[in-house]
Image 1 (tube, rainbow, N blue to C red):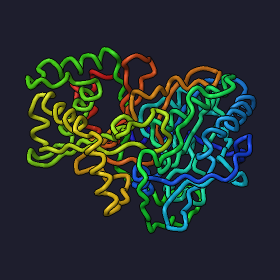
Image 2 (image 1 turned 180 degrees about the horizontal axis):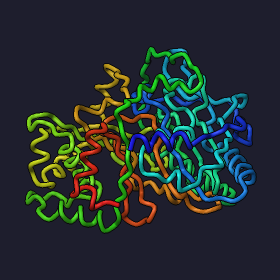
Image 3 (image 1 turned 120 degrees about the vertical axis):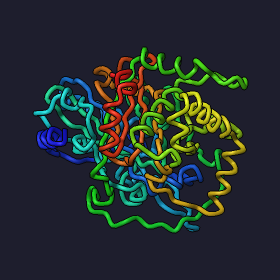
Length: 444
Protein backbone atom coordinates (compact mmCIF):
# COMPACT_ATOMS: atom_id res chain seq x y z
CA UNK A 1 0.00 0.00 0.00
CA UNK A 2 2.79 2.45 0.96
CA UNK A 3 4.63 1.67 -2.27
CA UNK A 4 1.44 2.27 -4.27
CA UNK A 5 0.89 5.61 -2.53
CA UNK A 6 4.48 6.66 -3.16
CA UNK A 7 4.05 5.78 -6.82
CA UNK A 8 0.86 7.81 -6.96
CA UNK A 9 2.53 10.83 -5.34
CA UNK A 10 5.32 10.60 -7.90
CA UNK A 11 2.79 10.68 -10.72
CA UNK A 12 0.83 13.66 -9.36
CA UNK A 13 3.08 16.37 -10.74
CA UNK A 14 1.68 19.89 -10.60
CA UNK A 15 3.24 22.85 -12.37
CA UNK A 16 2.33 26.37 -11.21
CA UNK A 17 1.79 28.64 -14.21
CA UNK A 18 0.80 31.95 -12.60
CA UNK A 19 -0.04 33.68 -9.33
CA UNK A 20 -2.35 36.69 -9.11
CA UNK A 21 -4.63 38.33 -6.56
CA UNK A 22 -8.34 39.09 -6.76
CA UNK A 23 -10.01 41.98 -4.94
CA UNK A 24 -13.66 43.06 -4.56
CA UNK A 25 -14.79 44.85 -7.73
CA UNK A 26 -16.11 47.84 -5.76
CA UNK A 27 -14.45 50.25 -3.37
CA UNK A 28 -15.35 49.29 0.19
CA UNK A 29 -13.06 51.56 2.19
CA UNK A 30 -11.38 50.75 5.47
CA UNK A 31 -13.08 48.06 7.57
CA UNK A 32 -12.14 46.49 10.89
CA UNK A 33 -13.80 43.61 12.68
CA UNK A 34 -12.73 42.41 16.11
CA UNK A 35 -12.10 38.68 16.51
CA UNK A 36 -14.08 37.28 19.42
CA UNK A 37 -13.76 34.44 21.92
CA UNK A 38 -15.19 31.94 19.44
CA UNK A 39 -12.43 32.82 16.91
CA UNK A 40 -9.28 33.33 18.95
CA UNK A 41 -8.55 29.75 20.09
CA UNK A 42 -7.96 28.75 16.44
CA UNK A 43 -5.05 31.10 15.78
CA UNK A 44 -2.58 28.22 16.23
CA UNK A 45 -4.53 25.85 13.98
CA UNK A 46 -3.49 25.60 10.33
CA UNK A 47 -5.39 27.03 7.38
CA UNK A 48 -8.49 24.93 6.71
CA UNK A 49 -8.06 23.20 3.34
CA UNK A 50 -10.72 21.91 0.95
CA UNK A 51 -10.34 20.36 -2.50
CA UNK A 52 -13.19 20.13 -5.04
CA UNK A 53 -12.70 18.58 -8.44
CA UNK A 54 -14.93 18.95 -11.47
CA UNK A 55 -15.29 17.70 -14.97
CA UNK A 56 -14.92 20.75 -17.16
CA UNK A 57 -14.38 22.09 -20.63
CA UNK A 58 -12.21 25.13 -21.44
CA UNK A 59 -9.88 25.77 -18.49
CA UNK A 60 -9.10 29.38 -19.44
CA UNK A 61 -12.80 30.25 -19.75
CA UNK A 62 -13.57 28.58 -16.42
CA UNK A 63 -10.75 30.43 -14.65
CA UNK A 64 -11.96 33.77 -16.08
CA UNK A 65 -15.49 33.02 -14.89
CA UNK A 66 -14.28 31.99 -11.41
CA UNK A 67 -12.17 35.13 -10.99
CA UNK A 68 -14.97 37.43 -12.19
CA UNK A 69 -17.41 35.74 -9.80
CA UNK A 70 -14.88 36.04 -6.99
CA UNK A 71 -14.56 39.80 -7.54
CA UNK A 72 -18.32 40.14 -7.12
CA UNK A 73 -18.82 37.84 -4.12
CA UNK A 74 -15.90 39.43 -2.24
CA UNK A 75 -17.88 42.67 -2.03
CA UNK A 76 -20.08 40.91 0.55
CA UNK A 77 -17.36 38.61 1.93
CA UNK A 78 -14.66 41.30 1.98
CA UNK A 79 -13.14 39.95 5.21
CA UNK A 80 -11.69 37.08 3.18
CA UNK A 81 -9.79 39.67 1.11
CA UNK A 82 -8.26 41.27 4.20
CA UNK A 83 -5.53 40.42 6.70
CA UNK A 84 -5.26 39.74 10.41
CA UNK A 85 -4.15 42.67 12.53
CA UNK A 86 -4.26 44.01 16.08
CA UNK A 87 -5.75 47.18 17.49
CA UNK A 88 -3.88 49.55 19.80
CA UNK A 89 -4.74 47.35 22.80
CA UNK A 90 -3.40 44.16 21.23
CA UNK A 91 -6.81 42.64 20.39
CA UNK A 92 -6.81 40.64 17.15
CA UNK A 93 -9.10 41.73 14.35
CA UNK A 94 -9.72 41.37 10.62
CA UNK A 95 -8.58 44.45 8.72
CA UNK A 96 -9.62 45.34 5.20
CA UNK A 97 -8.56 48.21 2.98
CA UNK A 98 -9.00 48.82 -0.74
CA UNK A 99 -5.21 48.96 -1.12
CA UNK A 100 -4.77 45.37 0.12
CA UNK A 101 -3.86 42.72 -2.43
CA UNK A 102 -6.90 40.52 -1.82
CA UNK A 103 -7.29 36.77 -2.31
CA UNK A 104 -4.32 34.82 -3.66
CA UNK A 105 -5.16 32.85 -6.81
CA UNK A 106 -2.64 30.38 -8.21
CA UNK A 107 -3.15 28.75 -11.60
CA UNK A 108 -1.49 25.40 -12.23
CA UNK A 109 -1.50 22.46 -14.60
CA UNK A 110 -1.33 18.73 -14.08
CA UNK A 111 -2.57 17.52 -17.43
CA UNK A 112 -1.53 13.90 -16.96
CA UNK A 113 -3.90 13.60 -14.00
CA UNK A 114 -7.56 12.75 -14.43
CA UNK A 115 -10.57 13.12 -12.15
CA UNK A 116 -10.37 9.37 -11.51
CA UNK A 117 -6.79 9.76 -10.22
CA UNK A 118 -7.94 12.34 -7.67
CA UNK A 119 -10.93 10.28 -6.63
CA UNK A 120 -8.68 7.75 -4.88
CA UNK A 121 -9.78 6.97 -1.36
CA UNK A 122 -6.31 6.62 0.14
CA UNK A 123 -4.46 9.46 1.81
CA UNK A 124 -4.16 13.20 1.44
CA UNK A 125 -0.41 13.47 0.89
CA UNK A 126 -0.94 12.73 -2.80
CA UNK A 127 -3.36 15.68 -2.97
CA UNK A 128 -1.09 18.25 -1.26
CA UNK A 129 0.15 19.81 -4.50
CA UNK A 130 -3.41 20.74 -5.48
CA UNK A 131 -4.13 22.83 -2.35
CA UNK A 132 -2.21 25.93 -1.20
CA UNK A 133 -0.83 26.74 2.25
CA UNK A 134 0.23 23.31 3.46
CA UNK A 135 1.59 23.69 6.99
CA UNK A 136 0.71 27.39 7.26
CA UNK A 137 -0.62 28.59 10.62
CA UNK A 138 -3.68 30.85 10.82
CA UNK A 139 -1.56 33.33 12.76
CA UNK A 140 0.38 33.94 9.54
CA UNK A 141 -2.72 35.74 8.24
CA UNK A 142 -1.01 38.86 9.60
CA UNK A 143 1.14 38.88 6.47
CA UNK A 144 -0.68 36.43 4.16
CA UNK A 145 -4.08 36.52 2.46
CA UNK A 146 -6.89 35.01 4.54
CA UNK A 147 -8.04 32.98 1.54
CA UNK A 148 -5.77 31.30 -1.02
CA UNK A 149 -7.03 29.38 -4.05
CA UNK A 150 -5.34 27.08 -6.53
CA UNK A 151 -7.04 26.33 -9.85
CA UNK A 152 -5.40 23.32 -11.47
CA UNK A 153 -6.02 22.15 -15.02
CA UNK A 154 -6.48 18.36 -15.18
CA UNK A 155 -6.63 15.98 -18.11
CA UNK A 156 -10.44 15.99 -18.03
CA UNK A 157 -11.39 18.80 -15.68
CA UNK A 158 -10.41 21.21 -12.96
CA UNK A 159 -9.37 21.02 -9.30
CA UNK A 160 -10.21 23.92 -6.97
CA UNK A 161 -7.97 23.89 -3.91
CA UNK A 162 -8.95 26.29 -1.12
CA UNK A 163 -7.13 27.37 2.04
CA UNK A 164 -9.28 29.38 4.47
CA UNK A 165 -7.89 31.05 7.58
CA UNK A 166 -9.69 29.13 10.33
CA UNK A 167 -9.25 32.00 12.82
CA UNK A 168 -11.87 34.00 10.91
CA UNK A 169 -14.45 31.40 9.84
CA UNK A 170 -15.80 27.91 10.53
CA UNK A 171 -17.27 25.25 8.24
CA UNK A 172 -20.75 26.80 8.08
CA UNK A 173 -19.27 30.12 6.90
CA UNK A 174 -16.87 28.35 4.53
CA UNK A 175 -19.65 26.58 2.64
CA UNK A 176 -21.88 29.69 2.75
CA UNK A 177 -19.10 31.52 0.92
CA UNK A 178 -18.54 28.67 -1.56
CA UNK A 179 -22.24 28.38 -2.43
CA UNK A 180 -22.53 32.18 -2.78
CA UNK A 181 -19.51 32.27 -5.13
CA UNK A 182 -21.11 29.50 -7.19
CA UNK A 183 -24.40 31.43 -7.33
CA UNK A 184 -22.67 34.47 -8.86
CA UNK A 185 -20.76 32.31 -11.36
CA UNK A 186 -24.09 30.78 -12.37
CA UNK A 187 -25.39 34.19 -13.44
CA UNK A 188 -27.11 35.48 -10.32
CA UNK A 189 -26.79 39.25 -9.90
CA UNK A 190 -26.65 38.95 -6.12
CA UNK A 191 -26.26 36.24 -3.49
CA UNK A 192 -29.36 34.77 -1.86
CA UNK A 193 -28.06 34.93 1.73
CA UNK A 194 -26.03 37.95 2.90
CA UNK A 195 -23.31 37.20 5.46
CA UNK A 196 -23.96 38.55 8.96
CA UNK A 197 -20.66 40.28 9.70
CA UNK A 198 -20.98 41.67 13.23
CA UNK A 199 -19.20 39.06 15.37
CA UNK A 200 -19.52 41.18 18.51
CA UNK A 201 -23.24 40.37 18.61
CA UNK A 202 -22.26 36.81 19.56
CA UNK A 203 -19.57 37.87 22.06
CA UNK A 204 -18.10 41.27 22.82
CA UNK A 205 -15.37 40.52 25.36
CA UNK A 206 -12.05 42.00 24.29
CA UNK A 207 -9.22 39.53 24.87
CA UNK A 208 -5.62 40.66 24.42
CA UNK A 209 -3.26 37.95 23.20
CA UNK A 210 0.50 38.24 23.01
CA UNK A 211 1.22 36.15 19.92
CA UNK A 212 3.56 36.64 17.01
CA UNK A 213 3.57 34.72 13.73
CA UNK A 214 6.48 32.38 13.03
CA UNK A 215 8.93 33.33 10.25
CA UNK A 216 7.37 32.56 6.89
CA UNK A 217 9.14 30.65 4.14
CA UNK A 218 6.62 29.93 1.43
CA UNK A 219 4.56 26.88 2.30
CA UNK A 220 6.06 26.24 5.71
CA UNK A 221 5.51 22.50 5.63
CA UNK A 222 8.11 22.05 8.35
CA UNK A 223 5.65 23.71 10.71
CA UNK A 224 3.07 21.01 10.06
CA UNK A 225 4.97 18.31 11.97
CA UNK A 226 2.96 15.69 10.14
CA UNK A 227 3.00 12.27 11.74
CA UNK A 228 4.68 9.96 9.22
CA UNK A 229 2.71 7.04 10.67
CA UNK A 230 -0.64 8.67 9.98
CA UNK A 231 -2.91 7.26 7.31
CA UNK A 232 -6.15 8.65 5.91
CA UNK A 233 -9.02 6.95 4.22
CA UNK A 234 -12.52 7.79 3.04
CA UNK A 235 -15.24 5.28 3.95
CA UNK A 236 -18.43 5.80 1.97
CA UNK A 237 -21.68 4.96 3.75
CA UNK A 238 -24.75 4.62 1.53
CA UNK A 239 -28.27 5.61 2.60
CA UNK A 240 -29.00 1.94 3.30
CA UNK A 241 -25.88 1.63 5.46
CA UNK A 242 -26.71 4.80 7.41
CA UNK A 243 -30.29 3.58 7.98
CA UNK A 244 -28.98 0.20 9.16
CA UNK A 245 -26.57 1.81 11.65
CA UNK A 246 -29.26 4.18 12.95
CA UNK A 247 -31.82 1.39 13.26
CA UNK A 248 -29.39 -0.79 15.22
CA UNK A 249 -28.49 1.98 17.67
CA UNK A 250 -32.18 2.82 18.21
CA UNK A 251 -33.32 -0.80 18.56
CA UNK A 252 -32.80 -0.71 22.33
CA UNK A 253 -33.21 2.98 23.03
CA UNK A 254 -32.97 4.05 26.69
CA UNK A 255 -36.25 4.00 28.61
CA UNK A 256 -35.58 7.33 30.33
CA UNK A 257 -37.71 9.25 27.87
CA UNK A 258 -34.74 10.66 25.92
CA UNK A 259 -35.09 11.37 22.19
CA UNK A 260 -34.25 8.75 19.56
CA UNK A 261 -30.63 8.89 18.51
CA UNK A 262 -30.01 11.08 15.48
CA UNK A 263 -28.16 10.01 12.34
CA UNK A 264 -25.12 11.96 13.55
CA UNK A 265 -25.16 10.34 17.00
CA UNK A 266 -25.66 6.86 15.52
CA UNK A 267 -22.84 7.17 12.98
CA UNK A 268 -20.57 8.82 15.56
CA UNK A 269 -20.87 5.97 18.04
CA UNK A 270 -20.35 3.46 15.22
CA UNK A 271 -17.03 5.16 14.39
CA UNK A 272 -16.03 5.66 18.05
CA UNK A 273 -16.63 2.00 19.00
CA UNK A 274 -14.84 0.51 16.01
CA UNK A 275 -11.85 2.88 16.19
CA UNK A 276 -11.54 2.17 19.93
CA UNK A 277 -11.53 -1.58 19.23
CA UNK A 278 -8.97 -1.16 16.45
CA UNK A 279 -6.63 0.71 18.82
CA UNK A 280 -6.49 -2.34 21.14
CA UNK A 281 -6.64 -0.13 24.22
CA UNK A 282 -6.72 -1.53 27.75
CA UNK A 283 -10.27 -1.60 29.16
CA UNK A 284 -9.33 1.04 31.75
CA UNK A 285 -7.73 3.44 29.22
CA UNK A 286 -9.61 6.67 28.68
CA UNK A 287 -11.07 7.50 25.29
CA UNK A 288 -12.53 10.88 24.34
CA UNK A 289 -15.21 11.67 21.77
CA UNK A 290 -15.13 15.29 20.58
CA UNK A 291 -17.48 17.10 18.25
CA UNK A 292 -17.08 20.69 17.06
CA UNK A 293 -20.69 21.80 17.55
CA UNK A 294 -22.32 24.70 15.72
CA UNK A 295 -23.49 27.17 18.39
CA UNK A 296 -25.45 29.61 16.19
CA UNK A 297 -28.79 28.45 17.60
CA UNK A 298 -27.38 27.57 21.04
CA UNK A 299 -26.15 31.04 22.04
CA UNK A 300 -28.50 33.56 23.68
CA UNK A 301 -29.70 35.43 21.72
CA UNK A 302 -29.43 32.97 18.81
CA UNK A 303 -27.41 34.07 15.78
CA UNK A 304 -28.55 33.69 12.15
CA UNK A 305 -27.31 30.77 10.06
CA UNK A 306 -25.50 33.38 7.95
CA UNK A 307 -23.33 34.55 10.89
CA UNK A 308 -19.86 34.88 9.35
CA UNK A 309 -17.05 33.75 11.61
CA UNK A 310 -16.41 30.92 14.02
CA UNK A 311 -19.41 30.02 16.13
CA UNK A 312 -18.38 26.53 17.13
CA UNK A 313 -17.16 24.95 20.35
CA UNK A 314 -15.64 21.56 21.08
CA UNK A 315 -17.99 19.32 23.04
CA UNK A 316 -16.24 16.46 24.86
CA UNK A 317 -17.35 13.21 26.42
CA UNK A 318 -14.94 10.74 28.01
CA UNK A 319 -15.18 7.19 29.29
CA UNK A 320 -13.16 3.99 29.61
CA UNK A 321 -12.32 2.20 26.36
CA UNK A 322 -13.72 -1.06 27.73
CA UNK A 323 -17.12 0.52 28.33
CA UNK A 324 -17.35 1.87 24.77
CA UNK A 325 -16.23 -1.41 23.18
CA UNK A 326 -18.04 -3.93 25.38
CA UNK A 327 -21.37 -2.19 25.80
CA UNK A 328 -24.00 -2.09 23.03
CA UNK A 329 -23.88 1.02 20.79
CA UNK A 330 -26.69 2.81 22.61
CA UNK A 331 -24.36 3.24 25.63
CA UNK A 332 -21.92 5.46 23.71
CA UNK A 333 -24.71 7.09 21.70
CA UNK A 334 -26.41 8.14 24.92
CA UNK A 335 -23.16 9.72 26.18
CA UNK A 336 -22.75 11.66 22.94
CA UNK A 337 -26.39 12.74 22.93
CA UNK A 338 -26.28 13.97 26.54
CA UNK A 339 -23.02 15.89 25.99
CA UNK A 340 -24.42 17.66 22.92
CA UNK A 341 -27.77 18.47 24.54
CA UNK A 342 -26.07 19.78 27.68
CA UNK A 343 -24.09 22.28 25.60
CA UNK A 344 -26.69 25.03 25.90
CA UNK A 345 -26.29 28.81 26.17
CA UNK A 346 -25.35 28.54 29.87
CA UNK A 347 -22.60 25.98 29.15
CA UNK A 348 -21.31 28.12 26.25
CA UNK A 349 -21.24 31.21 28.49
CA UNK A 350 -19.33 29.35 31.21
CA UNK A 351 -16.82 28.00 28.68
CA UNK A 352 -16.27 31.49 27.26
CA UNK A 353 -15.77 33.07 30.70
CA UNK A 354 -13.34 30.33 31.71
CA UNK A 355 -11.32 30.80 28.50
CA UNK A 356 -11.33 34.59 28.76
CA UNK A 357 -10.01 34.48 32.34
CA UNK A 358 -7.08 32.30 31.21
CA UNK A 359 -6.80 32.23 27.39
CA UNK A 360 -5.39 29.06 25.91
CA UNK A 361 -4.46 28.86 22.25
CA UNK A 362 -5.27 25.34 21.15
CA UNK A 363 -3.06 23.30 18.94
CA UNK A 364 -4.93 21.45 16.23
CA UNK A 365 -4.36 18.11 17.99
CA UNK A 366 -5.66 19.12 21.46
CA UNK A 367 -8.82 17.06 21.18
CA UNK A 368 -8.18 14.57 23.98
CA UNK A 369 -6.49 11.27 24.71
CA UNK A 370 -7.28 8.31 22.39
CA UNK A 371 -9.78 10.60 20.77
CA UNK A 372 -12.25 10.47 17.94
CA UNK A 373 -12.83 14.11 16.96
CA UNK A 374 -15.53 14.98 14.42
CA UNK A 375 -15.38 18.11 12.28
CA UNK A 376 -17.33 19.25 9.25
CA UNK A 377 -20.93 18.08 8.80
CA UNK A 378 -22.99 16.07 6.31
CA UNK A 379 -25.46 18.96 6.49
CA UNK A 380 -23.07 21.09 4.42
CA UNK A 381 -24.31 20.80 0.84
CA UNK A 382 -20.84 20.38 -0.60
CA UNK A 383 -22.05 18.59 -3.73
CA UNK A 384 -24.40 21.48 -4.51
CA UNK A 385 -21.46 23.83 -5.18
CA UNK A 386 -22.04 24.11 -8.92
CA UNK A 387 -20.26 27.01 -10.65
CA UNK A 388 -22.07 26.43 -13.93
CA UNK A 389 -20.45 23.29 -15.36
CA UNK A 390 -21.88 20.64 -13.04
CA UNK A 391 -21.58 19.40 -9.49
CA UNK A 392 -18.21 18.33 -8.07
CA UNK A 393 -16.99 14.80 -8.78
CA UNK A 394 -15.35 14.77 -5.36
CA UNK A 395 -14.80 16.85 -2.21
CA UNK A 396 -11.89 16.26 0.16
CA UNK A 397 -10.07 17.88 3.06
CA UNK A 398 -6.40 18.76 2.77
CA UNK A 399 -3.52 17.53 4.90
CA UNK A 400 -3.61 20.41 7.41
CA UNK A 401 -5.09 19.92 10.90
CA UNK A 402 -4.81 16.14 10.81
CA UNK A 403 -4.01 13.96 13.79
CA UNK A 404 -4.76 10.47 15.06
CA UNK A 405 -8.54 10.23 15.41
CA UNK A 406 -9.58 13.24 13.30
CA UNK A 407 -12.78 12.58 11.34
CA UNK A 408 -14.42 14.76 8.68
CA UNK A 409 -18.01 14.01 7.69
CA UNK A 410 -19.29 15.02 4.26
CA UNK A 411 -22.53 14.66 2.41
CA UNK A 412 -22.17 11.63 0.12
CA UNK A 413 -21.96 12.26 -3.61
CA UNK A 414 -25.01 10.07 -4.22
CA UNK A 415 -27.03 12.52 -2.09
CA UNK A 416 -29.88 11.76 0.30
CA UNK A 417 -28.70 10.39 3.61
CA UNK A 418 -25.39 9.00 2.28
CA UNK A 419 -22.28 10.18 4.17
CA UNK A 420 -18.55 10.07 3.40
CA UNK A 421 -16.36 9.54 6.46
CA UNK A 422 -12.78 10.77 6.11
CA UNK A 423 -10.65 9.31 8.93
CA UNK A 424 -7.01 9.87 9.97
CA UNK A 425 -5.49 7.13 12.14
CA UNK A 426 -2.11 5.70 12.99
CA UNK A 427 -1.23 3.14 10.33
CA UNK A 428 -1.58 -0.03 12.50
CA UNK A 429 -4.99 1.15 13.76
CA UNK A 430 -6.19 1.90 10.22
CA UNK A 431 -5.07 -1.54 9.10
CA UNK A 432 -7.13 -3.15 11.86
CA UNK A 433 -10.15 -0.94 11.09
CA UNK A 434 -10.00 -1.94 7.41
CA UNK A 435 -10.09 -5.61 8.46
CA UNK A 436 -13.04 -5.06 10.82
CA UNK A 437 -15.84 -6.51 8.72
CA UNK A 438 -18.62 -5.11 10.90
CA UNK A 439 -17.26 -1.61 10.17
CA UNK A 440 -16.06 -1.93 6.58
CA UNK A 441 -18.68 -4.15 4.99
CA UNK A 442 -21.46 -1.76 5.94
CA UNK A 443 -19.66 1.00 4.00
CA UNK A 444 -18.55 1.26 0.35
